[in-house]
Length: 168
Image 1: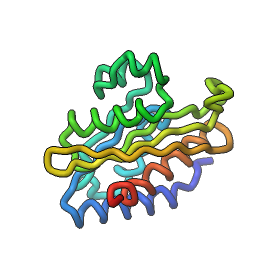
Image 2: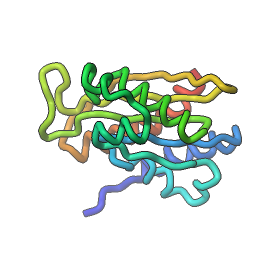
Image 3: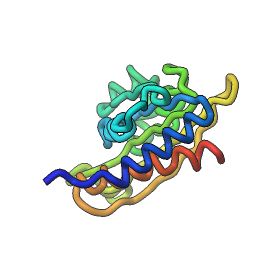
């Protein structure tokens, strides 16, 4: 059975309308969601008017090569951390020229968790370009459920945060 993505589609439409009103473009940098945020956005007809593109940087090497996240930062902090997700968002905006960006990195499970970072831990960063300056706002969330449930909740959280974090 295919899950109902009505909520994600509704959120993606809202994000698109919000971006259109600002004549702005959004880009995504995704790890644990593996492109699901970009998929939700591009499920909306006409999304090419406000969605620039996305980077799926699942492996640490991809975070470094595609988004400019320093390898030493990944070694010191781990991929699922505030500094790394902030670096992902900054690198995304610098490399794509998008006006707004969202970055996601987490542990969807069922393995990979630890006492410090249990399964369901996800870090988010929303960035915005203001002239030449880039500002980033990051938050951590803890989700419950199996791998798909964690990822679905992360996509919803990422979409919900685009407008709120960008206006902060």
